[in-house]
Image (cartoon, rainbow, N blue to C red; front, side, top):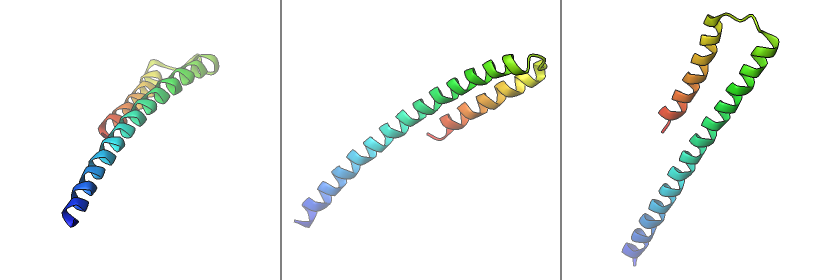
Length: 76
C-alpha cells in the first residue's frame, strides 16, 4: 500500500516537474518578446527625442538589451 502511494507521488512529481519546465520555457519566450518590444519602443523614443546621441551611446543601449537577453537565457 505504502509503495503504491510512493509510486503515485513520484509520477505526480514528474508530471509537475514537466509542467514547471514548460511554464519556465514559455515565460522565457515571453520575456524575450517583451525585451524586443521594449527595445523597439526605446529606439523610437531615442530617434524622436534624442536625435543627437552618439554611436557610443547607442552601442551602450544595445549592450544593455543584449545583457538582458543573455540574463534570461542563463536562467534556464
